[in-house]
Image (cartoon, rainbow, N blue to C red; front, side):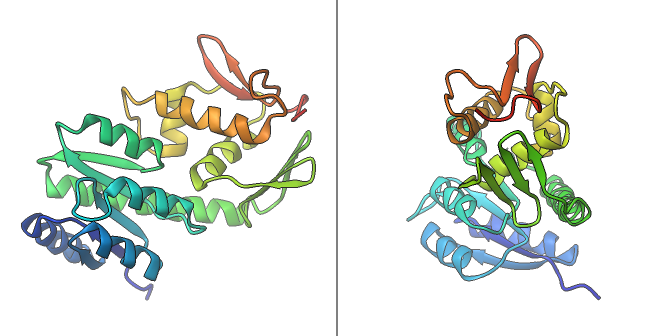
Length: 238
């Protein structure tokens, strides 16, 4: 029997945290609750979590910093951020920092459980696909190792965030094919966050800064005006 998936809830509202924890435990998940940002950061760094439910407005370390720290770690942890409807900017920042999904308070706990379940299924599927597609991808001067999650340009290692790696790996698996921003949100982020397509732009720009010789004149990830983006196999990285 597989061990229970471990979910960390970082939420300063005790009532909300208890309600979430109760429903998630009913689904068979092992729950740990941190009541403020400092405790959340300690728990994040202490253990390997299968999912993180993160309130953005926290005492101590705020949720954005915890999200940033989680995305700097080697292990990829699916993140759902929660916030009040009035903090639209924070939700956008959370997605751009690498959160997988968000829920605006007040939200349905049953919907939260469904989204956690969907994120964990997707995470498991990605892990299986990585094992199945264990072969290294070489496109021009770009080399991608999907198992080690390492990228090289001209034989030199390049440090990518987990989301940047997933985005580049997705492009590399479909060289020459054009994807709209909504396509990329659906395939790489896992949800069609209508209105948040600029998150894709942000990650594309960051990727170009890291893998292109001249990010202002990209030769690897190209913009196809009016349609989206594509990775050009024959050009590679100059």
